[in-house]
Each structure stands twice: as C-alpha cells, then as structure tokens.
Image 1 (spheres, rainbow, N blue to C red):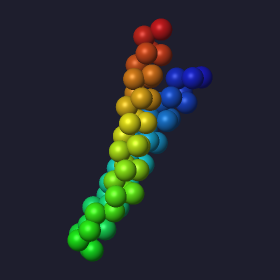
Image 2 (image 1 turned 30 degrees about the vertical axis):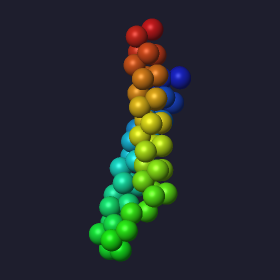
Image 3 (image 1 turned 180 degrees about the horizontal axis):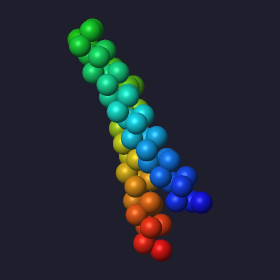
Image 4 (image 1 turned 60 degrees about the vertical axis):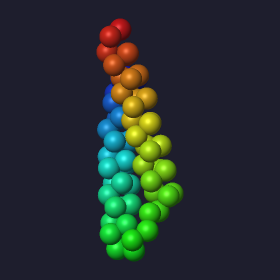
Length: 62
C-alpha cells in the first residue's frame, strides 16, 4: 500500500515539475522575464520527486 502512494507521489511530482517549468518557459518567452516563484516551485517538485523515487526504490528492495 505504501508503495502505491509513493509511486503516485513520484509520478505527480514529476508531472507537476514538468508543467511548472513549461509555464515558466512560456512566461519567459512572452514577457522576457524569469518568474522566480515558478522556477522555485519546479525545483521543489523535482526534489519531492527525487525523495519519492529514493523511497520507492527502498520499499521495492524490502
């Protein structure tokens, strides 16, 4: 059961990071300015995905 939630967290955080970085890139193309909040949120989501992936690997070992 924990494995399912961890895998879901990994997939959702990766998808969210992709969407946030895409939105940040579009804003950069349109307005020629970097939205630091979107970039920071993307980095947080990447970190959450990395933590979930590490935990998922650890759960699969056991």
